[in-house]
Length: 379
Image 1 (spheres, rainbow, N blue to C red):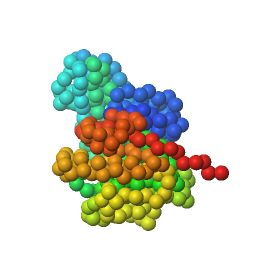
Image 2: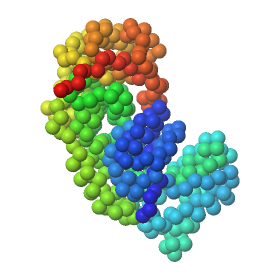
Image 3: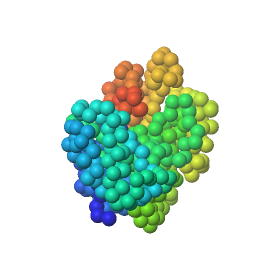
Image 4: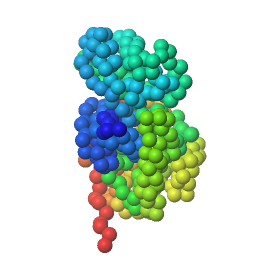
């Protein structure tokens, strides 16, 4: 198979970070747009991108793009694409859709037109009027934007944030992809102390450890495209072998998570064990006011309570003020906190070095970055 065009979908605000991850995999033909990063690469990139992308939501295989102001244009444009080259005769191929600023605004109608066009193209190859759809799953998406239709197939399956280690969650969990983004944006490195005083289910410490040890985030799960007969199975084996070869589990980790809720600590410890990190991370029950790290030049990376689902407004304010009080006495530490609170800097008692707008689910937040001094270089 020749080079393919892939789309890594990205949470709003993380597109540049996803693009950086794609380039780090060695793919330089990259285009960044709102909510997605498009890149051209060999078919092996389907496996490598799914295994390695920490901050993307999913990896889509782009089949084509064309103007579609009418249903006829949508039908003919879809039918012209090489569906039988990918889909076997028994393929299950549901169609999902979305439309924005386009004349074809009825998503169910667009889904029906695309389904019909794919079936017509499949009939030409397989010479049958009926398809059982009891084989490998290929989720087709038609996305209409400004009267341009983009047709893709999802290679991922369940979203990439589902790493496979978080069987237990606390009441208001932070997605693994966002936790990884916070760690990557902090420029934290293994060997430097990291503390999360509102650790909840332990997602930030676990994602930090996976980054520190260079554990591919998709190593413990499977992906939809693994069942596609048109893709070489050896491609997935090679990608996983590469991931195991690149593991650095001899790196020392100094990562601590704390939470005032003892049930959260039990969940965090269980999730760390599931991730293969039992004994490498320290979790303990403690209020943020008792956060007194002994090490120098560390990072606090945390997601304080919002008051949306957990805690009252007064409790949230108190927690952030306590965080500010402790951080104010850690002159050699850095702080990276994700919060929707408009008064966050006021409660912390200090303006952030930098702010970055991010979305935790549907909640608009800022990543407040307080850069402390870097540790001295080791000889």
